[in-house]
Image (cartoon, rainbow, N blue to C red; front, side, top):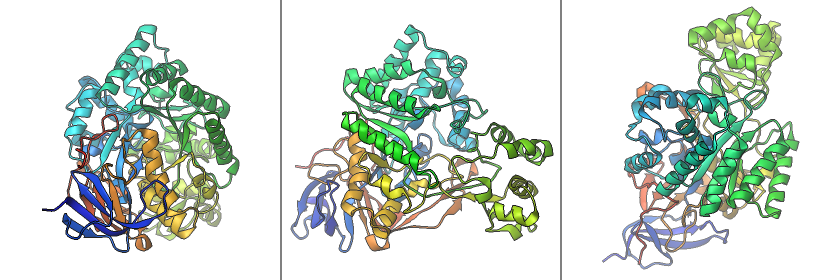
Length: 572
């Protein structure tokens, strides 16, 4: 009789603890790692040969927006293709529970701009068989999953439920009674399995106003009060459990850092701060953030920076683009139907204002944009040219050059904006810091613009193999063990006896991120940008093979990790 359900043989084991790699077999039984070492021949019901491959813990992604997509895509792609075996949903304070039935439409609309999730896909793809947060978790539990899901309790729906949408968006301070009810609902959500709370707090106007509601107004968490955050942090402190995630930019770095420190001190729990980003032309930004993170840990405050550790740029058309909201004129021009946008972008008077508010944040400036997808014979001549070069050739302002092309193509011209950072550049300074968690994948969000879900594969290929910035042992600790520890994923992120068998087996020399594609695979016929991976021989989630030779096996062994815990029986 076989001793194990599965044995991974002859692999080079990197267990996630920073211990030096060693050759070993891994025996799995009942979904957990039962033994490691030199195991007897034919000890497994199934045995896979990992000779020449790395065997490592599955990656852990703490910044996703798969709250809707998980209901129609059990693999939560791109993440599922790139070795992610556990992911946190409900980031930035955005989510779909608690939501009353009559408010579902508004909840979906709110995600169409801030995270650019297609409305028709949410409408057709979500079951909406819940009202409360515990009921939402039950629905997630029932849904087929090829990865594990850890749920934040997003603050936005709590505020709307208690205060009403109008008052929450007006930024009214909750009354004492309302604060008590917000905290009661939060505790109810934690009791059901929530892992903590999340919020986006971006200044409603000015250079940080980049993630807005569908109508161009602030999200409710953007105008929430410090006291509300402190009340929620105190709940975690009282319970001595959970953690926090916050995307914050009030216009004062010092104020934001003091606020994060206070919440961490009140709660005694970890804080994941978003986002630590490298700007190649402004290294003082990330260097100041790294210095602050070091200072926090020296003072015993567990503040971790979520690093944008991918150089994935943005491909977009003005038919859908919404990430220049920091400039009011561009924000307004990007609102409305395609016909309304066409009229705005063609208006000479409006263009004068657009020129005076040239967007420079989030992505490249307009002169650095590349025309990657002309949509007519007349604009084909500009393919692969920068807007700045086109403007110089035509004797036009860069804004006129860009908008003339876009308007001619009925806003279907595809542009590409390079990322704000590059490999190696200053990225080495970020990945070298022990308090930076890799990856802001934004999985499930900005699906027509961004493919940052590739970040784990990209880290191995670039930070380790190409540039030698770190060892594989360090990379796997940072991609798996550290985020699992911070988020309270019970016993995950490592390969050890008794741990859930979330394991990746990959060909190190041939691991790659594949070129981008456009696929029409979302509900309602919507499209998205994807980048698949090459080199993952096997991906296991709770001991079952979900990916084999880079292909889905349609095995749905993922779990909802209430309190960070699964339902696996321990191997004897």
